[in-house]
Length: 286
Ligand code: KIV
Image 1 (cartoon, rainbow, N blue to C red):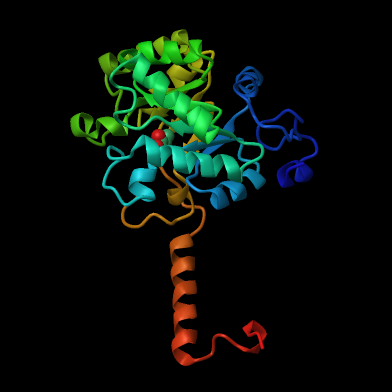
Image 2: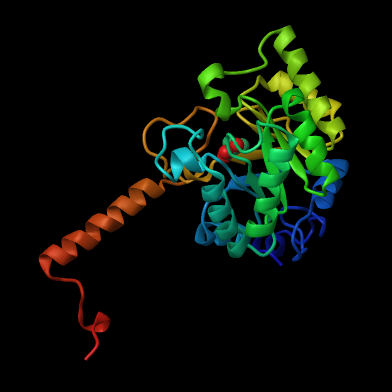
C-alpha cells in the first residue's frame, strides 16, 4: 500500500493514485480511470533514483520525456536527443520503478520518416528499455505511425498543442487559439483517438479548448499549461521541485526549492573540507 493510500483508506482501492494496487499500471487502468472520472498525476523522470522516489510516492505514470534534452543533458532544445540516449535513460527509469507505467518519448528524427521507422524505434524502447508505452508528437501528421504501433501491440500516447520538437517552426507559444486552430486541435485529438492512442498530452493550449477536447474524447487528456479541466496533469519534474535554473514557464508550479537545497549542501560540504572539519572521527576508518 502506498503512503497516500494508508492516509486515505476511504479512496477507491483501484485509484491510479492512492489506490492499493501494487502491480504495474497498464493502459487498461488508465482507460478505467477515465471511465471513473478520476484525475491523476504524471511526472517526467530521467534516472532510476528519482524515478524510485516518485514510484514510492505513488505517481502512477512516468514519462521519460525528451525534455531530458533541456533539463538533463544540457541541450538547448529537445531536438538533439537521440534514440540511444532515450533508450538508456528509459531503461534506468524502468529499473527504478515497480508500479508506474513508464512511457518513453520517441525523439525527433526517430519516427518522422514513416511508420516503419517509428515501429523500429518504438520496438527498441519496448525491448531494450522495457517501457510500457511510447509517446510521439503530432495528431493527423503522425496517424500512420500511431496506427502501425498500436497494431503491433505498442501503446501510444499522442502529444498535441505545443510540440517542442517543432520549435523551429512553432516557437514556444500557446497553440489552439482562435476558432480555426481550436477546431484543428480537436480534429487532431479525435484522429489520434481513432488511430488507437490511449491518451493525449495537450501542451500550452487555452483551458477552454482543453476542456472541450477532454469532454469530446473517450481517452484521457493530460494537460501541461492547459488549465484545470484535463483528466490528468503532467509536469517536468525539475520544474516541479525547483531544480531548473533560469526562467520557468508560468504554467509550472514549484513545490520545493531543490536548487537552493542542493547548492546549500554543496557549499556546506566545501566549507567543511576547506576548514578541515570534514571528515570527522565517525567518518574515518583505522
Ligand atoms: O518531454 C516532455 O517532458 C514532455 C512533457 C512536457 C509532456 O513532452
